[in-house]
Length: 280
Image: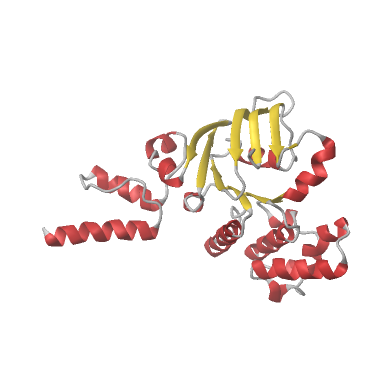
C-alpha cells in the first residue's frame, strides 16, 4: 500500500534563486501526525505548500493519495483531500459572519443546503465555536479566528490537514487551543502535517521532521529527535524546556534520561530522583 503523501527527490526553487528544497524524499502514512521543524528559511512552508499543490516541484514528484500534484486535472481532488490552515487567519476568513465563512467552500462545491448546515454546525462544534455561529468575524480574537479557519477546513471533510505555523500569531492560550484541536482531529483519523517553530508543540506529534537549509536533518519520533539537542542547537533550534532541564542535570553528573519531552515526564523523572535520594 502506497503512502498517503509522498515526496520523491523533490527540489524547488523560485525562478533563478537557489533551491529552497533540495532532493527531499519523504513518505507520510494515513493517520500520521507529523510535525515539521526548522528555522526561518529552512523550507518548512515551502514543503507544506507542495502538499495541496499551491507550489509544484521544480524537480521530482509529489503524490497525494496516489495523485500527481503536477497534473492539473488532479488539483480539485487533491484540494478536497488536503486542506490547509495558514499562519494568519485574516488571510483565510472571507465572509463577515462566522457560519457564512465556514460554509463558503461548501457553497462553491454545491453541497445541498441541509447537508451544508449540518457540516457547518459539526465543524464549529468540533473547534468549540458553535455558540459563535451568528457572530461577526471581525469581532473575534486571533485565536477564535484561527479556530474558525480550521472549522472551514473541517467542514470540507479532508483526509489531510496541513497546519502552516497556525499558532505563530497567537497568545499561549490560543496556541494550546489549536494544538489540542490538531491532536483531536488526528485521533479521529485525519492525517495532520503540523509546521511549527514551537518545540513543545512538535513534541506532541507522533513524528518530527527537522529541515535545515532545504534538506531533511532528522526524522523520527519526538524522543529520538529531541535527544539530538547538540545537533538541533547547532542549526539554530532549541529543545523542549523539559529536555533542556535533563541535559542540565546530566551536565551536573545526575543520571537522567535525555529524551524527556513534557511536564508529566519531567515530574516523573524528578520524583524518582528525590525518592532515590531519600532512600539512600
